[in-house]
Image (cartoon, rainbow, N blue to C red; front, side):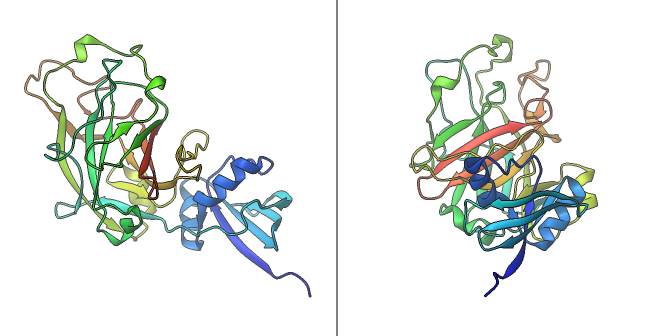
Length: 286
């Protein structure tokens, strides 16, 4: 009996189909349904696979051009993730900025002068985020440090611990950016929506992409250091001129890239999570 052919879709670009470890993690995170495929092919790039058994007999880009043939698939099954968004809404149950939750303690790195900043909180009771296995996911990141990959242990969800402190140093430390107060940002609320609005997404920072990552540099899917599992994508938070730093002294700049929420060179904060180990990975791309 001939093998049944099926069509599957992947979001993104720069897929190395000849690196088995890379392909395994990529398949686990970037599988999308047809709606997600249509979104990604408009905003960046997307891939269509004609599959027979455990082989992609033809791999096509969004222009229907064949880019690979007869690629063995190291992951026999992968999930088609839904593309959805967090959209600015004053009544939304997710937020960026605002006061640091009273129960939350910012991570620290004792061997350096680097300070973490409170970025925001995702509501784990939202059905889109129920897989997180946590009621409130508080997000922190050191905005004055250019670090390309931080692992945080949320075994205590209100007091995350940095798992890779050895990757930090004081090369970026600037005493002029120091302040005794914890820097917070304008409280901005978001609600989840499954409606795909490509024009609005491309127009600015009012939509936060969730479900499937859109990379600005090479794809970099993290592996959980405790379980050795591919971590799951949560969302990528945009830099935003409208989310400004709330500091008492307006005459000084307390952030490397301006007094507003900014990740590196006006980049994006990518958040991954492993619900089993409660490990978060945060990384910026721009």
